[in-house]
Length: 415
Image (cartoon, rainbow, N blue to C red; front, top):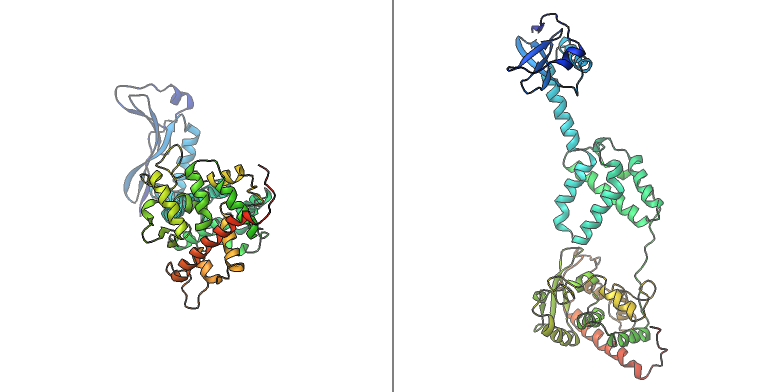
């Protein structure tokens, strides 16, 4: 292999010459020593070039643009290139390899992998769930880990991020941020971007989160009082219907407010929809009381997609705050007494303790995962006959509690 540096005339240029070089009709060059020169274009642009021969071929390497790259900078770059040549490396190939490596690093930062993971799995999640995940990534992880190559991130770095979240009192968010970080790392392992998941070594590194249960009413007499308060609610008819149907359905509040007429078969007495958390179909058998209430509501909102459309825009479901806001207007504290979600716990407790319904039947109606010796954790049609009977028995029981006002002396609630 023959390596030759192309030497120009030994005319050492100076900063003053470079600065004062004026454009001409045609491009010309000012030559420095050891292959470096400055090209001056007719438009006034000035480019540094390094001319050399490698393996018998004449080559030119760009050294940058003046004045961003000074004469001293250009000479330093030339000298670095000459050292590569002396070591048997073509500086042009070296530059391409360096750019490729930098590009690969940019594609393999924690942020790049995290956003790729998020976009891949986002279609599988409910909108509310995906918005929480991207917020945790952007607020709790990316500011500190985002630009780091994913292969170089250590367990203590991840733990430091999680401790920041824990330090502001958000223990549950800290655990979820750690969980999301682990999902990103495992995706990187699966796609060949890193060899291991550093979050594996952080199990038990943060204090367990203390989960608060949704406020709920489980005393039958108090439930009767709640039902009578709902009957006396003075808000819109749509919200009143939602309040009256919520105890009958005991589904998640988001599933209730997003109920669509196309999912409901009044003749068959069924509501079929996809569970937002698991994307599995679920069946809610409709008691006769629920069918009657829905028929009445259909006259008002049947033209809309949603059973409970919004007040201002019928093309969207009612607000996710509507139920709890109504409960507060009725005088209930949604932090300590009852929430829309708390009606699930209300039904679960009373169905078992007062009506003697088997727990597995209740849990299937709640769309919870139930351990099964056959490995079938959830089946939309399992116990369906029993669930139909349970839902009618539950609706009849609620009617009895509501009518209990005639025989149970109750103190009036403060508005």
